[in-house]
Length: 394
Image (cartoon, rainbow, N blue to C red):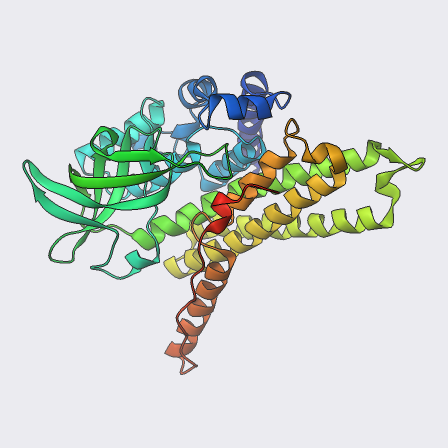
């Protein structure tokens, strides 16, 4: 668990326990698979409790705008807990959106959105910018002249929580090549839910056709937003990995085969030990990323975000696959939650970049520093499709 000071650790532990109790009552593990496929990727009852009563959405919102203004260590612990429980609530996207809005909170619309995120009365999603946004003048969405001022044209896929959000935040470029962050009412967008491998997460295609939008700032920081998104996703993946390791270990201690518990077999011990090492590495990577968010420079955050994405993605993939294998036949059944965790890990591993892309970014960061010292220049990355989002079999 990611904790900061002793006082902060006590408060964070209380928050984590509160979240677990709320999830246990509204969405217990027993029967979760059935509810996921029956009710879809948004648990309205649980979101009402977490968003409005407990105020999970307020964690990343500054106090000046009605939020709790907690440390990012507390936010990370909450995201890890929600990931561990596979909660179907729009907290991950809200944390990323709040981070972007807080940097342009002088705008009245941004301020109002922050207050509504904090109170749990509005779901705000964000189209996480890709690598193309790193250069000014480039982007997926464009600004055009509409009947009432600024309007957007363009499209994006795999937008988290777009189908359940009230407002979307979109980075777009105008005709002069100036990048801006815009707020758009979802009712004005064409939003098509996507059927992906992860039934616990809402992803959608978003299309804007001369859609009215409000400019929040003409000085956005898309790279920083993306790095915050990667860190938040890493926290979620760490929760998935740790839960699956605990589940596999617990089952290995009680499942008897050939007159012995399977945890006594050397092959099983080695499998679980490998996962334990991966989880510890992921935990350290997230701790470093939390430090980078709170105290590091932009370069520190970029490096830490890529490392966390790599470490947590690998840990979640290994832990979920091992969990299925250790559980044997029961792990492959539709009723067991093991496949839900596997699917969550699979989709997270490619949601905002593949492992190869994160590794290539680390290389570019390292060689970029080397370039300034007379080193060898970096090369362009080779992109891979996000095919795992549409995989169907563990």
